[in-house]
Image 1 (cartoon, rainbow, N blue to C red):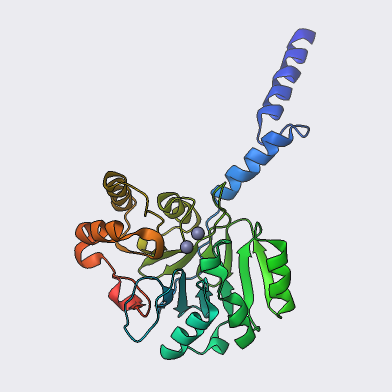
Image 2 (image 1 turned 180 degrees about the vertical axis):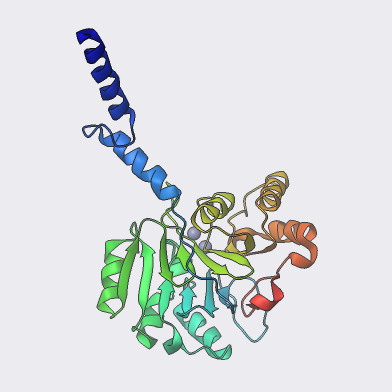
Length: 288
Ligand SMILES: [Zn+2]
Ligand SMILES: [Zn+2]
């Protein structure tokens, strides 16, 4: 009888310590459990019904009236907040392109910066001189000097580590990657999610996978820099295969994606390839 009791309490103790978070002293286990729980959290919000993406800065050209330069930036209109994703490398070029596109800097509520490379944050200072009544969401790993100077220019700065919702239906992946840390943006529309990347340093496929783990929806459109300039034709083809497997319906590789990537995506996606460059306007009505 006594032996049975001891055995039962040993088994009970074993069960308790094997349960998630059961062992209070083991920080590593706790952290692992915490991370795996975060992965399963879906942040859906309500679906965006109208969406217009305008490319405000790119090294590829779509509208001859605008100026190309190395970098990326686009404007997201339709969600409850108007969002500028990245600011390109040169504020004068960004502001002049915006002006020609009829975009008023003062209408922008949120600026998202993908990663700490000049061709994505370089336009911020000049932009803030036009409109500092914005919230800037940037990866926590950003330079503290940069964060302080953005605050000194009057912007509210939010440092992002984990996936989060920035306004109804719009999400950030949180920091990804180990070498160059980067975040991407997800807009959950009625037709599926739109994933927007700056340079995609953590890997374009990993980013889309992460987006799918955050928002429970089909992938309607992926655009921005895919960072595939140095990849071989077969590596790019593997990425296109992965895109198809993940159910990505429309693709618009730009900025650092490379000419070969754009050609191969165009061949594979046909009418569902979006030729993205500065001045390109993409509305949700075209993405069905
Ligand atoms: Zn970069
Ligand atoms: Zn870049």
